[in-house]
Length: 315
Image (cartoon, rainbow, N blue to C red; front, side, top):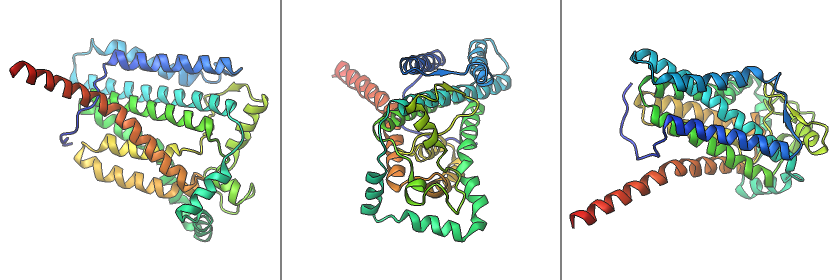
């Protein structure tokens, strides 16, 4: 698998990455506790053990001399770390939902109208062409396949530093998404435009609204990580993830086009299957760009500073 050159990115050590994740999870747990929320540790034990196993592999990795075994361990560690980042995002979004107030669907729907986007027309098209339902949902749920491909591609080609940069970038995107969601919660396009008894069974309906209302009312205080519910409408994290996956796969010539097409298809299905306003998808793409910038800008500044210093010495 050929890999081409790429811009400078922030270099993150294995220890630094796990420290980043540990601090993030700890901060998220403290925020939950301050809001009166907790985790169902027993029900969530499988996922938590998976994260712990990844940390164990990270400690063991330095002793492995066999290149193939080392790459397999890197892949397993990367998948475990990604799961930990996902848990970090879940905890933050549940905390944001608990602290949020009201819904901003009227504002988001009006923004779509100003952009000239007719959400109900797209929904009606899917309702009339039911043969598209299965492939549409497959594309929407490809969000679970793309990270596996990206992580394994980096690990098996020995690009562990860039893999860690992608994982940290993903965590940054989740943190930004949760922060924005806190101030702009929404019920989503399907319940706003169609109601709670839709004719076309989209992948996302109104379950997240039930969870948000329960968190706000205090009737839901314990989070089961084995059965999480995606709560965020604005910004669309599906949109953010799509761009992040393409960015991560771009240096791999043979992966570039397939991953770009797969995630473009996911983006196309997101308005209806994910019940997203167009403005939410645009916001998600902006979140991804900001997150990628957080990975590139520090390294570029460091490189510029280094070069400037070298120029002064040779002047």
